[in-house]
Image (cartoon, rainbow, N blue to C red; front, top):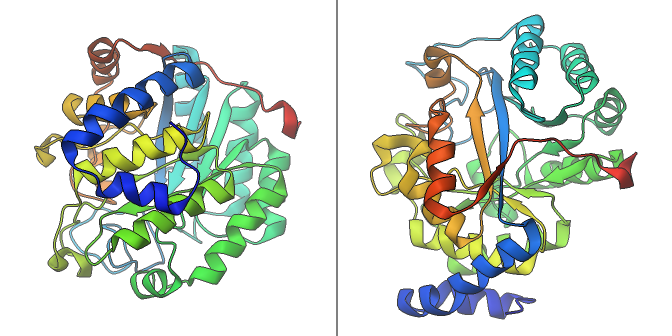
Length: 334
């Protein structure tokens, strides 16, 4: 099954659930094996700071939000946690934070260089920087940078992300690509007010950007945020449709499988949600290196916790996939 244009994307987004599961899911499963050899890409992860200067209307860590214990993990502790993950067998690490100007860009460079020296594949998601800083991160050893466009329509992005704007976000995305790092980017599925046309445009933008990883997720209300009163959560079926489309449209792309199930209180480690995502073509699972209290405070959404490492084995067993914890080299960027 080839998916090449917006009309084809809209056809799958709008088809009946029965037709989708009968005709599209089997194709996405086959593509998973053909493209990725049936392997789940397991990555260690640490939220290094939950302090953020931005006021995105949907994020639980937005500036000014209350009831959240703010923290910054000292660089030496991040490096220690990363080394422990490497000792355990993890070849990849994902460093994520709020957009925290107080953390110190020099600390990011130091952490990146130290973990790259261990041979790890290093991904970062630490907000918008200038082009020269992205080049510095690449020189320090960063392999991939995650910067989501969230919404592909500028008016929607600017309304929901008042601390930045769509043009600035896209300049940052292009600067990541120009730096030599791989670009990971994606959207939020079925946020209140999103149209099917917007969702299709999101998917087409991911294709045009040539992303390495789609860190996509359905809209999940975070208590106390302005958008939470607008409705939600986003449709899990629409999320599965997007995952299958991405698998068929962008061969070899990695896609977040850490998706919610029907019971949102079970968090993103719910085997039901993860298994459904894997069967639709997703492959990326995480193990959070933060201790539980801090993991609960990295609250972009409610019930985000990913600290149950055992769920990875359960998902692999339930889906018949194998686990890949090794890192990888990016020859074309060396």
